[in-house]
Image 1 (tube, rainbow, N blue to C red):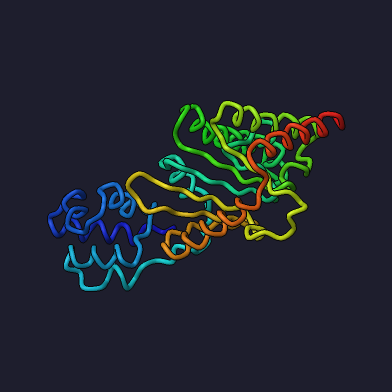
Image 2 (image 1 turned 90 degrees about the horizontal axis):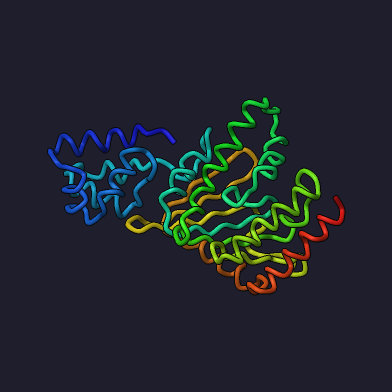
Length: 264
């Protein structure tokens, strides 16, 4: 997203002679939230913007000219990647592909090889490294809390060769067995469910409002409108309620990995 809003906001704070912490105290917000708005990583809610206008004596400028947080951006995942690194809890829904932070190197390479226009080997290597760097948040044994809701199609569709799929699924099984990740499967037999339109990531933080990130073909959207985030969280909860229980999901994934392995 363009950071003209964040830059202008920072100029108003400096003109008022306030530190980020002083403005946060006056607007009943956190300093880190102020910092993220100035850096262009967050857009304030309408209520936050109104409080900032009052604290900065800027009339209703900040609340009247909020940028659209749901527009597609060129490097559409970059802002979401930064937020992912700050989250205390991440809930993923995967419709067709395994979520990026759970991908193995071979699976990630197979996914990235399908891009159009085709990426060079060097570019593909760079993207794989970036994806594996994201997965380092799993090195912490406790935080962030990660849940994954996996449509059966993400487990059945062969990405790369069957051996790649077997390895990928068993990677998630291993994370589940270590209780690092909690994963549930939405089976084909369920039929229609509330998340079928695309992939979804829900992010919660220690001192910032929650956000959601949705993605489609060559487009991604960050949602931080409280009403929209609430709707997406409710849709996730409804789908999760229809998913296989944890033990059944684990058994299903082991069996699916064996099926892929037998086809290799």
